[in-house]
Amino acid sequence: MNPKPWWAKVGHRSLMLLATIYCVFPIYFMLVQSLKTPKEDVFGNPFIVMDPTLENFQELFDREGEVRGFVGTALRRSYPFADWLVNTIVVFAGSVAATLVASVAAAYALGRLRPPGFRWWRRGIFAAYVIPQTLLFIPLYQVVHTLGLDDNLLALLLIYPTMALPFCVWILSAYFQLLPREIEEAALIEGASRATAFFRIILPMSRPVLVAAGIFTLGTIASDFMIASVFLLTPNNQTITAGLGTFDVALDELAAVAGVNLLAIPVVTISALLARGFVRGLTAAMIEGA
Amino acid sequence: MVSVKPAGRAGDIRLAYALLSPALLLLAVVIAYPVGWEVWTSLTDLSPLKDGSTGFVGLANYRRLLADATFWQAALVTVVYAAVTSAGKLALGLGFALLLARPFRGRALVFLAIFLPWAYPAGVSVIGWYWTLNPPTITAYAPFMGQLKYAVDGTFGIGAWAFASVMLFNIWRGSSFIAVLLLAGINAIPQELFECALLESRSAWRRFRLVTVPLLKPFLALGVFLSLTSAFADLSNVWMLTAGRIVFPVIGTHAYWLVIKAGQYGPASALSLTLVPFLLAVLLVLFRLFDPPQERSTA
Image (cartoon, rainbow over all chains, first blue to last red; front, side, top):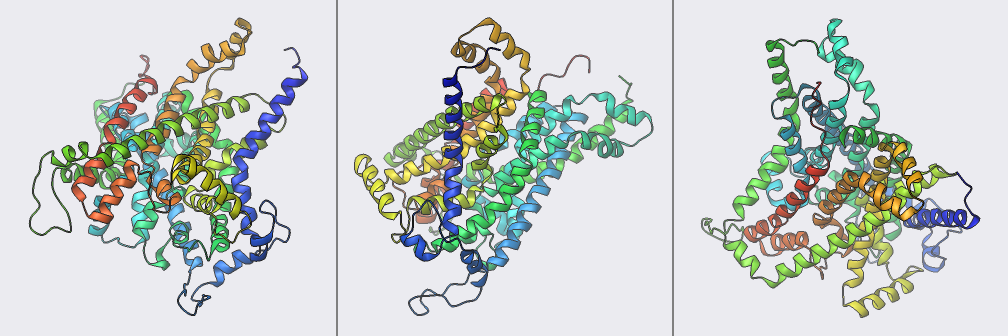
């Protein structure tokens, strides 16, 4: 192809720069904020941090059971951040695992075993995506209450998997469906069981799509704020998301922003490491699915 | 194809239902039963604040909604919210995806930057956004943000700034996901089609309109669908970014408000359900555009 004129290159570069700044600036801003001392928060330049400190992060963990307050004990609050961290890890890891297991099983059934009406099953499951859990609070609360899961992490482990499940079943079953039949049948003829063929052949071949489904699930459940806040009430039972929602804006701004970063950094790192796989998996599912 | 014995096929079908059951059970408990409950409740006058038995009121709750000015306001705001954010997300996302579609130096980094807003956990970034846009008065940038807020509120009415910030947040996060989705879609289209187009026409706009958009149509449809569902359901972001001070109610916040303030379960259920037909209609369009292919005749 003919070389581009210089202005096209400059234009392309500046578009890139603009896009990058637009996407990263809010994240950068929150990160800088969390590294500030109270003094710099008040008097410093909002866009940079001259004297970075980790004391806000430190404070999150020190706060357990501590008396806090500028006005006697009126503002006494303790934030069991260590508990929140553990709860969050349990809920996120458990929900992603449950989502993947349930959707791989369903997708295998729909994409390879194809029971009668499998196309309608798939559409029906995807249609569940239409119904936002946030509109179902009262009946969901009844369900949770009936199962005795009030104020219990298991409530989130029950609800979160359904948030991404429809999408995961959709892309996984589209992918499974057009994997050539022969690869599995060869193994079956050799005398392998269906399970062996699945775990030794189908599953390894589906790695990119599994990564895509996993990242999508993580992103979806990490975006929930309402469900965590409504169903987890006791401070010790909360996740980071629910807990940070109870922070007081005027008093704990820096600690809260530190908390935001503390959850975001691991989640973003995991997603970023697998980002290429995410695109590749979506592409694979779309070649099969479109 | 290897001939499969009927017994084997029957076993396969049983296995299929067994494998489907965990997913279906989850959806039944968390989605289907609650939706059924809401449908039923929307036809009654159930309320925890009312003594006596719950009466069946037919479509009265719906009729009352249609006569209620607040409902129409909430519906209008919801539609505007969904339309503006979806258009913004789609335009930005498509732009990002097209920028990333061709190789250039530093593409991996730009891709990562564009991927970040979606990967950043929205459950907490919404808290960060709220405090950034409505900072405590002591912070260094509070005066600037305060002026911006009053300028916007002064021009468009109280609450406009909060609402604009919700939209900005939604677009910021959503455009990132749409970009990744469309990029995956572009990668799924055989490169030769674009190369052929390059030979056919020298006008970039014509190529975009006549080749890129039609090829991307199913993915655009999927993007629109995901964007609309999230926008209609966007209770938490509105709630959080306006700190519960709802000046511009959307359907979701209005329903939540009816429940927690007034204990009006029936009307709230009816209200929540008004969104579902629209989303189902969008879903039907989506199924037409984006469905796994019919089984090949050879299979």
